[in-house]
Length: 561
Image (cartoon, rainbow, N blue to C red):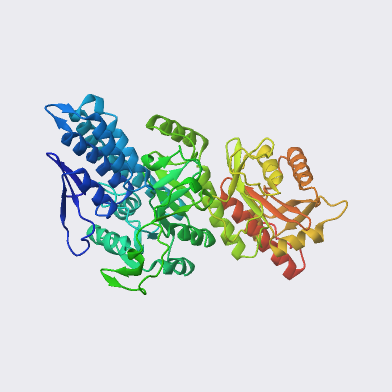
């Protein structure tokens, strides 16, 4: 069957019996509706896209069986279609595939079969597109280096029809030479990771290690994971993601360790008719899956079990949902190829996406936190995007930030323009004051000890600038002179917007002011054409202030040349 796990051969649905893997690659031939339902319920066929396609062909099988002398028993086909759709309640693709084929019933069996075949072909195209979009995002978030990724359950060609979703992204990265290793969760209780994903990893030649589900968080803690990549069975209008049980705890662990958590799924897995993740019906499976394995009892007879097939991860724990149309920005909005193209054009016109900017901010914030410059929730970083800026949200530890812990604000008035509900950092007005008066694209506001101390020593009722001379580090501060710099010193205010107003007035009146400043007792602010440049200027200022502390001199002689 080559790369496809599903085929249609003259009225017979042919697939891989996943119950036999990894020990046997066994073909399963399905010819009746009961066999379709049994294959789905017993997980001979599993994975949201795959069962959607199987459900579509199941309706074709029902229609062929309900046809006598060229006349189709419509009521019987509709009843059989309902039975197929109910085989597994959580995965939205099943009902979607059934309805797509059933919609062609008035046109006849041939039209239904053609629709199911189109759905099969479409799935492969969609998977590759989503996988490529996800691979692009992962490399933007994690950097251009060999990546160590973790995945859960099975999302490859066995769970779809070809290529795969999350595993598809791994395959794209492998082809690019950007994948170092994959950690595969075993995915209890039916071990889809151990039985199926490990098999697919070996088949694709991808380096991998298998682990128990409960070791995944420790793998993150010991810096063996750059990102978590999973699939989905349903994505609701609030951005919540239903997926194989164990996904939710991965998302929590990833958030704690500041690791991107990426969901890769076809657009058909989105269910905007379901408002909230809490509205999803989670399938409860048989106790025998937990109390034993392979026919061997592992628990006392009569032990009660809690065996949900899925869990639901809230949107705030998900770094990004990626479909064939790219990163999902509005979970409640329907998307087509046309709307997706328009969205991408808008993103290209405005520069880096908010998500990518957030990832860059989070990475630099974690580094500055480790240096002691952003203790606790103090400090903030922003990146400008045209008329808006992406800035760190208020009240979050800078050592644990992720790409989604950001707020988009309007440069003109510092007010949030996104629908995240998060509050921007209190010092947002400082950032927007810089953006309104300078051509900067990034601002860093931090609290390094030596520069903060220098801001206090130099502050006074008549002091507006602090002069430093003779230090080599002046060259890294963006001064108009390489040997001397006058850095503005602003008074601190309990009313932070007043600090922003003071800074905007000064920068407007002093167009040659350097791209660094002191706020007495409050820290320093630096800006630049890139976030790296803004950070470097802050680092140079702190290093220079440390030297002045050690020498006792802000100005040292430099010989004329």
